[in-house]
Image 1 (cartoon, rainbow, N blue to C red):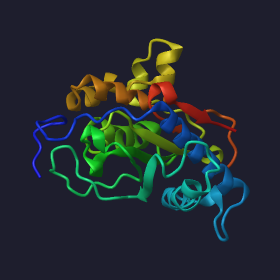
Image 2: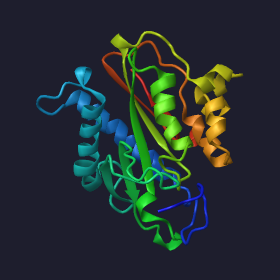
Image 3: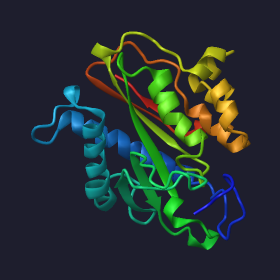
Image 4: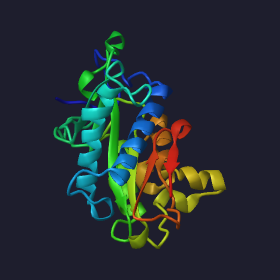
Length: 244
């Protein structure tokens, strides 16, 4: 597989049509509810406050795939819209130079064949990152998370991306803005902290839709959270934060 760029000549439609906002919001709701279940009714041997990123992601995947997609307890989150949820699938980056990229979660979509989409890349790609004193926002959440969308490693055929953050109040006391947030000029820009304003993002990304995707970046974390907190950033119109 050889691709010359994000949207090279192809029999498939690139970029893929936008994921309906209702599907993105249903996904946010499902992730939020899954995290609430891990907090209130954890599986045997699982302790949220001490859990590592991979352990939390594994539990979230199990709830989404094995329970929510079939139970219909989350309105709009079902197999009529989402084919399945895969944890760490091997997918190619935009030019095929890295054929085995592994985003944390991909929710593959259904019933979009009429648009000639590339099924192996048609989904809601989610990357999960811890945010604490050992995992600074700028380096981990932004540079090793959001930048994977901006550079075309993840979701390069899509117009959306999803970041999921895990934050521990007791271990995250400093507020560490990402590169894009250092250039904020208003409270709203701080909230959407555009990573595309940084030198690194500009050097890797020229397409407007990918610069817009970099607005998923988060500038700092609130100071009132206990144990593990959970926050999600998706497309700006659908962004939500879950705080305690």
